Image (cartoon, rainbow, N blue to C red; front, side):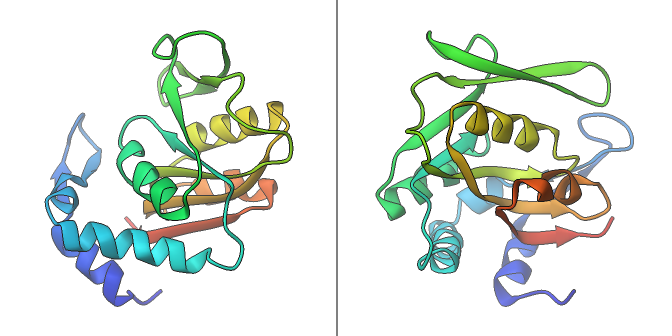
Length: 181
Protein backbone atom coordinates (compact mmCIF):
# COMPACT_ATOMS: atom_id res chain seq x y z
CA UNK A 1 0.00 0.00 0.00
CA UNK A 2 1.47 3.37 -0.97
CA UNK A 3 1.39 6.26 1.44
CA UNK A 4 -0.86 9.23 0.79
CA UNK A 5 0.67 12.69 1.33
CA UNK A 6 -1.32 13.00 4.56
CA UNK A 7 -0.14 9.58 5.77
CA UNK A 8 3.46 10.55 5.06
CA UNK A 9 3.00 13.81 6.97
CA UNK A 10 1.42 12.08 9.97
CA UNK A 11 4.09 9.36 10.07
CA UNK A 12 6.80 12.03 10.04
CA UNK A 13 5.60 13.41 13.39
CA UNK A 14 4.51 10.23 15.22
CA UNK A 15 7.10 9.21 17.80
CA UNK A 16 7.85 5.50 18.02
CA UNK A 17 8.95 4.27 21.43
CA UNK A 18 10.39 0.74 21.37
CA UNK A 19 9.66 -1.47 24.38
CA UNK A 20 7.12 0.99 25.83
CA UNK A 21 5.05 0.53 27.94
CA UNK A 22 6.52 -2.98 28.04
CA UNK A 23 9.14 -5.04 26.23
CA UNK A 24 8.11 -6.03 22.72
CA UNK A 25 5.65 -3.16 22.22
CA UNK A 26 6.53 -0.40 19.75
CA UNK A 27 4.36 2.46 21.09
CA UNK A 28 3.05 5.05 18.62
CA UNK A 29 2.92 8.45 20.34
CA UNK A 30 0.39 10.80 18.72
CA UNK A 31 1.05 13.77 21.02
CA UNK A 32 3.33 15.50 18.46
CA UNK A 33 0.32 15.57 16.10
CA UNK A 34 -1.61 17.55 18.70
CA UNK A 35 1.17 20.16 18.79
CA UNK A 36 0.54 20.92 15.10
CA UNK A 37 -2.83 22.66 14.66
CA UNK A 38 -2.53 22.69 10.87
CA UNK A 39 -2.01 18.92 10.79
CA UNK A 40 -4.93 18.42 13.21
CA UNK A 41 -7.14 20.47 10.90
CA UNK A 42 -5.96 18.48 7.86
CA UNK A 43 -6.73 15.18 9.63
CA UNK A 44 -10.25 16.27 10.56
CA UNK A 45 -10.93 17.69 7.09
CA UNK A 46 -9.76 14.42 5.51
CA UNK A 47 -12.19 12.35 7.57
CA UNK A 48 -15.05 14.83 7.09
CA UNK A 49 -14.46 14.80 3.32
CA UNK A 50 -14.59 11.00 3.23
CA UNK A 51 -18.01 10.92 4.90
CA UNK A 52 -19.59 14.12 3.56
CA UNK A 53 -22.08 12.22 1.36
CA UNK A 54 -23.00 9.77 4.13
CA UNK A 55 -22.33 11.53 7.42
CA UNK A 56 -22.67 9.92 10.83
CA UNK A 57 -25.31 11.13 13.27
CA UNK A 58 -23.14 10.76 16.40
CA UNK A 59 -19.48 10.20 17.26
CA UNK A 60 -18.52 7.63 19.89
CA UNK A 61 -14.99 8.51 21.01
CA UNK A 62 -12.97 5.91 22.90
CA UNK A 63 -11.06 6.88 26.07
CA UNK A 64 -8.84 8.70 26.13
CA UNK A 65 -6.81 9.34 23.02
CA UNK A 66 -9.92 9.09 20.88
CA UNK A 67 -11.49 12.04 22.68
CA UNK A 68 -9.43 14.77 20.97
CA UNK A 69 -10.25 13.99 17.36
CA UNK A 70 -13.66 12.61 18.30
CA UNK A 71 -14.59 16.04 19.67
CA UNK A 72 -13.19 17.82 16.63
CA UNK A 73 -15.11 15.51 14.29
CA UNK A 74 -18.36 15.96 16.22
CA UNK A 75 -17.94 19.73 16.03
CA UNK A 76 -17.22 19.61 12.29
CA UNK A 77 -20.22 17.37 11.56
CA UNK A 78 -22.30 19.33 14.12
CA UNK A 79 -23.44 16.11 15.80
CA UNK A 80 -23.38 14.73 19.36
CA UNK A 81 -20.20 13.39 20.94
CA UNK A 82 -20.51 10.34 23.19
CA UNK A 83 -17.60 9.16 25.33
CA UNK A 84 -16.80 5.48 25.82
CA UNK A 85 -14.96 5.26 29.13
CA UNK A 86 -13.38 2.72 31.42
CA UNK A 87 -15.66 1.23 34.06
CA UNK A 88 -16.62 3.62 36.85
CA UNK A 89 -15.60 6.83 35.05
CA UNK A 90 -19.09 7.89 33.88
CA UNK A 91 -21.91 8.85 36.23
CA UNK A 92 -25.00 6.57 36.20
CA UNK A 93 -26.81 5.21 34.25
CA UNK A 94 -24.46 3.22 32.05
CA UNK A 95 -24.21 -0.05 30.20
CA UNK A 96 -20.94 -1.91 29.96
CA UNK A 97 -19.14 -4.46 27.85
CA UNK A 98 -16.23 -6.58 28.99
CA UNK A 99 -13.49 -7.49 26.54
CA UNK A 100 -10.22 -9.39 26.61
CA UNK A 101 -6.80 -7.81 26.73
CA UNK A 102 -3.49 -9.56 26.15
CA UNK A 103 -3.36 -10.38 29.88
CA UNK A 104 -6.74 -10.09 31.60
CA UNK A 105 -9.79 -8.10 30.64
CA UNK A 106 -11.23 -4.59 30.69
CA UNK A 107 -14.66 -2.99 30.71
CA UNK A 108 -15.90 -0.08 28.61
CA UNK A 109 -19.08 1.88 29.36
CA UNK A 110 -21.42 4.41 27.77
CA UNK A 111 -24.50 6.15 29.09
CA UNK A 112 -27.77 4.26 28.60
CA UNK A 113 -29.28 7.32 26.88
CA UNK A 114 -26.28 7.86 24.57
CA UNK A 115 -28.03 7.20 21.24
CA UNK A 116 -31.42 7.37 19.60
CA UNK A 117 -32.77 4.15 18.06
CA UNK A 118 -31.38 3.71 14.55
CA UNK A 119 -28.85 6.54 14.95
CA UNK A 120 -25.76 6.12 12.73
CA UNK A 121 -22.66 6.13 14.94
CA UNK A 122 -19.04 6.69 13.93
CA UNK A 123 -16.69 5.02 16.42
CA UNK A 124 -13.37 6.84 16.69
CA UNK A 125 -10.09 5.97 18.40
CA UNK A 126 -6.46 6.79 17.86
CA UNK A 127 -5.28 3.24 17.12
CA UNK A 128 -6.64 -0.03 15.74
CA UNK A 129 -4.62 -3.03 16.90
CA UNK A 130 -6.46 -6.19 18.00
CA UNK A 131 -9.88 -4.56 17.69
CA UNK A 132 -10.95 -5.50 21.22
CA UNK A 133 -11.90 -2.03 22.44
CA UNK A 134 -13.58 -0.96 19.19
CA UNK A 135 -15.48 -4.25 19.06
CA UNK A 136 -16.72 -3.79 22.64
CA UNK A 137 -17.89 -0.25 21.90
CA UNK A 138 -19.65 -1.42 18.73
CA UNK A 139 -21.51 -4.01 20.81
CA UNK A 140 -22.66 -1.18 23.10
CA UNK A 141 -23.91 0.81 20.09
CA UNK A 142 -25.97 -2.17 18.94
CA UNK A 143 -27.28 -2.90 22.45
CA UNK A 144 -28.64 0.65 22.50
CA UNK A 145 -30.44 0.01 19.17
CA UNK A 146 -28.18 2.35 17.21
CA UNK A 147 -26.17 1.40 14.11
CA UNK A 148 -22.43 1.27 13.52
CA UNK A 149 -21.89 3.69 10.65
CA UNK A 150 -18.09 3.54 10.55
CA UNK A 151 -14.86 3.14 12.47
CA UNK A 152 -12.15 5.78 12.11
CA UNK A 153 -8.61 5.59 13.44
CA UNK A 154 -5.48 7.68 13.11
CA UNK A 155 -3.28 4.56 13.10
CA UNK A 156 -3.85 0.93 12.11
CA UNK A 157 -1.44 -1.88 12.88
CA UNK A 158 -2.03 -4.09 9.84
CA UNK A 159 -0.08 -7.02 11.33
CA UNK A 160 -2.75 -7.41 14.04
CA UNK A 161 -6.32 -8.65 13.42
CA UNK A 162 -8.24 -5.49 14.30
CA UNK A 163 -9.81 -4.86 10.92
CA UNK A 164 -11.03 -8.43 10.51
CA UNK A 165 -12.55 -8.33 14.02
CA UNK A 166 -14.67 -5.30 13.03
CA UNK A 167 -15.70 -6.21 9.46
CA UNK A 168 -18.89 -8.02 10.44
CA UNK A 169 -20.47 -4.72 11.58
CA UNK A 170 -20.72 -3.69 7.95
CA UNK A 171 -19.55 -0.13 8.57
CA UNK A 172 -16.62 1.45 6.80
CA UNK A 173 -13.24 1.01 8.52
CA UNK A 174 -10.94 3.93 7.79
CA UNK A 175 -7.42 4.50 9.10
CA UNK A 176 -5.19 7.38 8.05
CA UNK A 177 -1.86 5.69 8.79
CA UNK A 178 -0.92 2.03 8.36
CA UNK A 179 2.01 0.15 9.86
CA UNK A 180 3.01 -3.30 8.60
CA UNK A 181 5.23 -4.10 11.60
